[in-house]
Amino acid sequence: MLGLCLFGGLAGAAAAKEGAQAHLVARLPAHAAAGTRITIRWTVDLPDESGNRVPFGAIGMFVRLVGRNGARTQATAPQSSGPFTVKLRVPRGGIRAIRFGLHGSSDIFFPLK
Image (cartoon, rainbow, N blue to C red):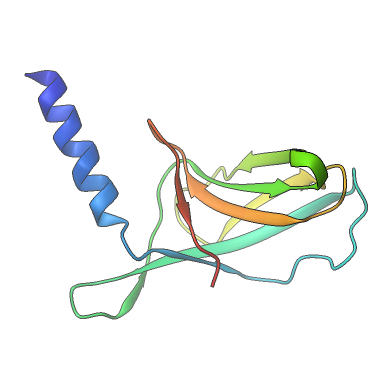
């Protein structure tokens, strides 16, 4: 019974995040060298029942930088509401992609807008 309750709660939580989007608060450094420590600040919002964008926050929000050949670095924000802030190192090959997400039994990712 507990398993069913947990599963139902997780399904509801995932559905509640539909349409969520990440937004950088400040631009990333254009040509940050591998190993450079940078600060990333972002927010996440999602549509409410009227279609207006409202802030979203949770424990476990993270950012992942992807460099050349799949090298990556990742950091989880210590705060549960935005703007979220992390400090992390640029991966080997520089910043080729950035992903924002929420840790869970399976990580949920938000598109950058």
